[in-house]
Image (cartoon, rainbow, N blue to C red; front, side, top):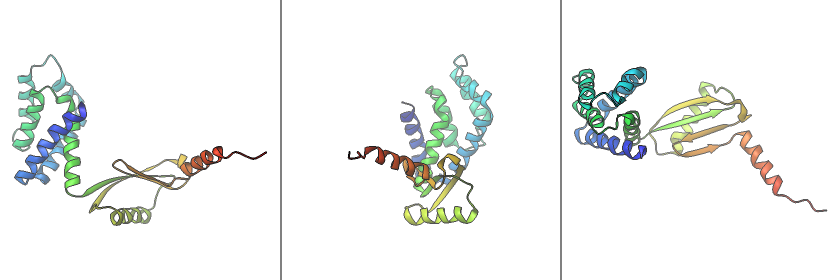
Length: 183
């Protein structure tokens, strides 16, 4: 259900942004608003509190954002509050951002390696991803997991390429367990 809510509202905002040619500015605004919500948990709790009336919540939002962000984004925020869906606001704005990135052919790649990668290795990985995908650029996220033993795991969306030694060893063990030795 939460996925449906974020998709519905996020897609609506995206369609408005495309129609009005405000994709870039709305992307910046949603990033700023998300940062504000993540930094101000008490404010978000107030906007989700059941004892505060919808009118008070709308007033709080308009006071905080009217004139500082576009009317489209202010309208979305107030609509989400009026419909009692503010608990999903971060998912809604994140969904919108994903749509914008897909529209602009910007991929997000999560690269996990057994050791820290040098800048040359990072550049090489990004170049290979650009050549083998339809994306024009990537937002790269790197992390280290020593349990991989060696190799890397690359995740783009729901696609995963796992060339880690840990996985190769696990696959070999599984294959070896299937072999029956003749007596």
